[in-house]
Image 1 (spheres, helix red, strand yellow):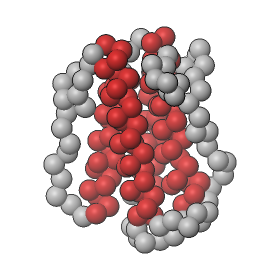
Image 2 (tube, one colour):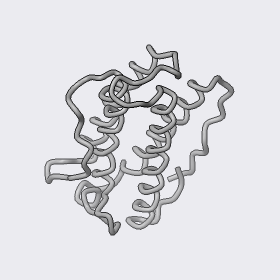
Image 3 (tube, helix red, strand yellow):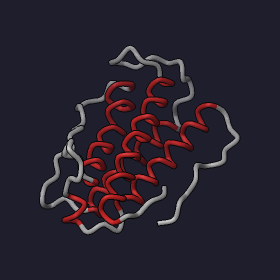
Length: 155
């Protein structure tokens, strides 16, 4: 796995943050792709997190802050990391990509980063920065797991 450094971007606040969010999504997906399903289901960390579990969690994260908290849509998404035998790398990556595409479509319609969310006392700016933070934190977890599994390093 070759290292893919952070994106070079000259843009405003929202576009810069969205560019880093998309970069982190792809880094996370790259860490899961190529793993055998049975290995991707296993936890290698004391917390019990697995590559597929993190993908499932992040699928919910893409929905919870933007759709549930900011827009006030129901239902509250699943945020757990539980993995079942039928979960595969392909199915979890596809679900994550679909949630990310749905989020990107919503982000494209939102311009006022000072707008306050429907359910939480948070601005859209806070939600965007927090989403980037959540992805960055879990990208680090995926880095560690992948290196423990097969020695692969890089973003």
